[in-house]
Amino acid sequence: MYFSDEGGLQVKLKLGTLFTSVWGNLEQCSQFDDGTRQMLALCYQEALQENGCLDLLELQDASQHLSWKAASTNEVTSACYLSNFLDTRIEWEPFHPDLIVSAPDAILSALACQVKLLLSIQIEGVMLTATCLKTGLDSTMTIQVGDRQHTIPLDGQARNPGLP
Image (cartoon, one colour):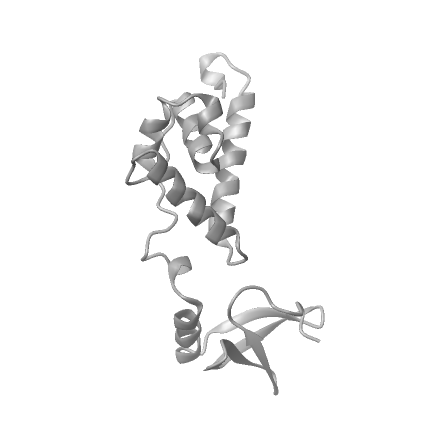
């Protein structure tokens, strides 16, 4: 970015836009339990192993010795290469075991039921507030919306989004 106090017009360079998009995409992939998080975890581990690194900061250092062609074979490695090229450091641990997103669905649902967590959920196209009641042995959770109860799947995506 050319900053205005340095005589610039305060607009992002093309590489800055690409940098934001690439890292934003990786962050978004790490947040969802729809298969993209698992795919990113495999890609992340592959990048670390192939480059002999223990974490993302080491991978960013190692990427400076790669060609763009070699770095672009893995999404995480190419993001690190771009960071290094722009002389930027990203400190991020997307798969740290203490992150809530790393907790198994069964544990999160048990905690939600224990504290009677309120959820915002779409039922028949309308967003409603539901209370977590109990978890089932079949990886489901029973929720209550008003005087009605619904059983929803815990793992992955709902089979029928919006519950009929």
